[in-house]
Length: 148
Image (cartoon, rainbow, N blue to C red):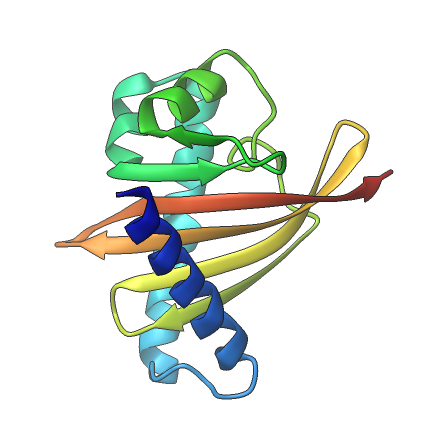
């Protein structure tokens, strides 16, 4: 299962890198709509974090969600939500210093950004997927770049 996830994550990262050279196959109108949807999703996520709303957070993360920490540890959905609710600083709870968003079809968005958490700078990737009419976070990963 983990090998399949890592192969999928590698493929998605490769697809992202390729998009730097070739634009994703999403029309301008569709990408504007998806950007508005993801922006709204991220705002609702931040509100759920602020309100410590476990039920809403559970609906925002895919059942098979994984987060790969900068140190290599991998957390699933329940552990990630527990970390958020206990007040740990996470990619989801801290505003990014920068963010770039790429669209893949109508159901996949990859966000890449940089965030400062405490005294460290992290480069990260978050993969959003749309199932039905609902966006969820499918996976995330962080790499520690440097001390502030």
